[in-house]
Length: 369
Image (cartoon, rainbow, N blue to C red):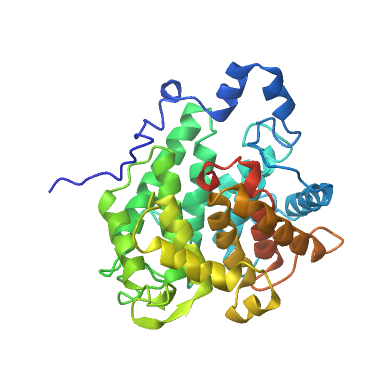
């Protein structure tokens, strides 16, 4: 049987090892050589951000404090010493650091990003799983976030041997995700085989975004995996436009899962599906005002990590006012040392908030418009 690759009509697949076949963002900046490009360089990493509109200096100060807190709390082995979800925490924290403009080779957080990449690579197992099933009962979260993080690292890695290592890890990771997918098209907290084919929305979204990140970086991703995941999301859609927690528990919509599903569909290139307008309306009705009532749905930072991506993709007319409210709320909840508290762990909450605060700086391809 011939396996299709997940193709993109806008961006064809490229060889991820052959560095000369495509330009990194750093190379493009060097070629630009214009005063506008120089003016756009950031102290964080030397890369040019996309137009982010007028930014409140308080947002920048809070972002820098949060990034510094992550830097100071990383261990010498590259992880953040959390008892829960250690692989996922390292991947999310690493992604937040990359969002600043640093890479593994330049910028103030280059060492921390390199260490995080080393740690996550060390968690890659022979079967392609990135994580440790012996210590993490929900290892698919870490696997998905790790694919996302390492794919962003790969896009900026200039050393051939390092790129080859990343390509090998990510190629095996994609294969694991395909094998872990349930017959319904989703993913659960563990592989389909180990979890008796149980699946649910939040872990499904982490896989789709991770796979899309891999695809953007040039890693082959079979189209069947993504097509089945999209059908899974549509199967979980209710009459009100919201998405259910699981294909086995339909009928009750979850705003957080709906926002995450929309972000995943956008990542998969699905902007025009007949289902998207209903889903977007449901998410906007329940989440756009950023009030305390949204907390009743649980996992506020998870919810807005994804809903902010959805709104950003709609353009500045919708984004700017929403961004101001979101960022002001986030800044107002920051602790003096630079971190944030909330569900799961301060590393998790801090990483989520930093990704949101840096979303419209445009450094991470996976979150760009």
